[in-house]
Length: 143
Image (cartoon, rainbow, N blue to C red; front, side, top):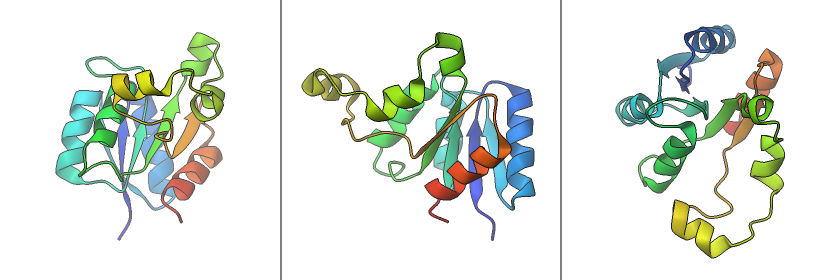
């Protein structure tokens, strides 16, 4: 049975592209257009992995990620962030997420409910390289 992957992105073309890459590599995909729909599908469908955009309407990917990591039923679901935030902001977001020391860990934990060790299981920058995406998916799924 193929692994089920939830794609959460507000751009229909990105969902179509990601779905095609996943299906070519033997995965099944389902999709949501924002974080609200994404959390709902996550609870209903219990996917093996989430591909998550960060900048979306209604509920951002960051908020969705925080909520799923705080939910004991969802917290172990691997998440790979797929975003163009670095291109839009000019900030190397991968470096920020994984290497940035916290100035005030207590405030961070109180504000987000997360710890400094709560980071996504993978990160892929847009524009998406199919090989990089599949590598990140396999690593997050421990394949």
